[in-house]
Length: 304
Image (cartoon, helix red, strand yellow):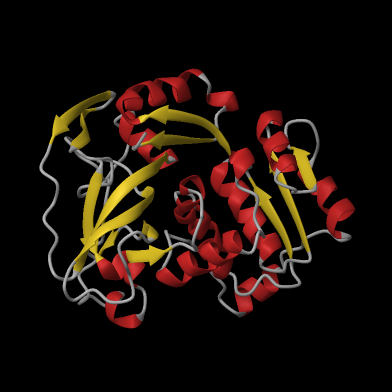
């Protein structure tokens, strides 16, 4: 099979590699689509702090099961699937307290270990999530970034009935805003300094949009939400409140993302601005570099 290896920043080589042998707890996925993530671009430029070279990239993925191990249940050959990309120890405090996505020994496929930039990929069945029948591979490859938005929203509790402001209308910001709407937020607004990205947000049905380089966000919020957001510093002090971070996702976030897609609560097609053949992988990065202002989600077509 063909496998793309980033041997150094900005340089990708294609190598012949054996199709992986499937263990009894694994499935073999024939990959059809992979998406290029902003973190992948950092790797391309040699600026990702946790990645060394050579590395097989990619973690936004959709494919089809072509073989499964003897112990695999609940998945079948020909199922369309996506994949969670965590490798965790299962023994540290986060892992044993329901927070495996922040494992003390976390590795992520495509960064610290082999990613999915190949024609076939063998993976433990427990990391595989089935896509509803007929889900386009493009959409399957967007489950992962959508799950990032779902998880971030969940860090603040349920968004149902709440007013949500998203700063930044790139792929993750756009998907976070759409997820908020799809999960029942009362109002959603998004800001950016790019008219192109705000136009994509409009195409995705995000009604409240602001170019932050042309107008004051603070003045805009009351006109959209009906009130100014106020931080009660006394409450912050009295309750010892903390700034909440967010990292990646858990399986439950993938399942919510899949449901949002299946029920048509998110609009994904406008986000996909470009497709490249697998062998043009390096050209895809060059295109992103040359068209920073009008590229959103770039897809690699692994199979013809």
